[in-house]
Image (cartoon, rainbow, N blue to C red; front, side):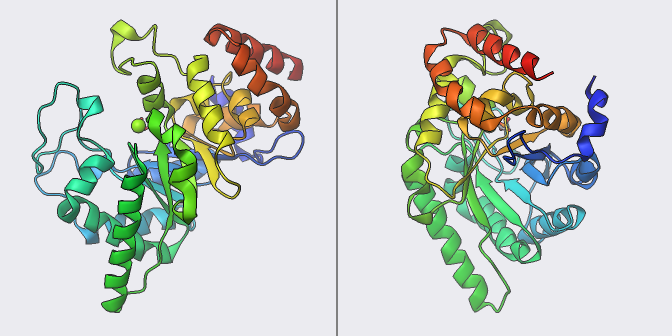
Amino acid sequence: TVSLYAREEKLEPITVDGVKVAVMCNTGSLEEVRVAPSYGCGGVGLFRIEFAYMARDVAPSEEELFNLFKKSLEFLGGGPLTVRAPDIGGDKPVRFLEIPREANPQLGFRGTRLLLKYRDSMLRPLVRAALRASVYGDLRVMFPMISTVEEVEELRRFIEEEKEKLENEGQNVKIPLLGVMIEVPSAALLVRELVDKGRLSFVSFGTNDLTQYVLAADRTSTYVSNVYDELNPSVLRLMSYALDHIREGVETEVCGEMASRGVAIPVLVGLGIKGLSVAPGFVGKVKYVVRRINFAELAEEVREMIEEADSSRDIKEWSQNYLKKKD
Ligand code: PEP
Ligand code: MG
């Protein structure tokens, strides 16, 4: 069914009333980055780089990561390329790090928590590679599993220190646009403080994890799949709160699976989301929906609708009715 929208892949993602919504690709390997432009996306909104860490005995070096980022920017004609710092730990162990066995790995030592602990082997090579590759295009770096302001402050400080060191070594460097994933409820509630003082240029909602943590329903468990629901009003109310507290000039994107669901797109765009990053095969479909909706119309209705909804059923119904009128 996805190929039904092949024609749309070439069109501009713009609403009926002229609001641009960036439609980008999620990728998980260099090969996927290479082919991404052929699906019509305006760059990569989520480059999962865990593959560079898995099934090997040493962590990737600065040079290896630099080459990966530089090559990726080339494939994208300069970008934008949003690299997600690796979300290792929890259920994604690697051979070269000691990761404790925990009772609740999803609530444990993973993502940025782990990167900040293993600074020498994990964070430094990544940050240095990004600072150097940034000179070659529109590189953006975002950090997963952020839950506190202190984590963002520590990251910023570390990145500035490494920039200075590289400059002292005579290297040509630039700080990439920095962002965080909003995938933990605390990050959604603290978003104003997270982006404060120019600490961040963008945020991207990781709705796969955000849904799991809001509803306390393991995203991988079939036993609770009836509870796990991205369109539950609780998830959307939290996103709505976050979007109301983000200052002007900070870009807002969604890179979870939700971004590729037809019924979710009117809700997300109505809330003010300006970028949707999806698996390449969904680019045409997402553009198709974006090109049919009217931002001003949605913005007026969507917050109240979310406040009044009892369940995802109400949200789906509202969205389906809206889209039906547009066909
Ligand atoms: C998410 O959590 O929504 C996300 C995009 O990241 P991942 O699926 O890699 O956890
Ligand atoms: Mg995630």
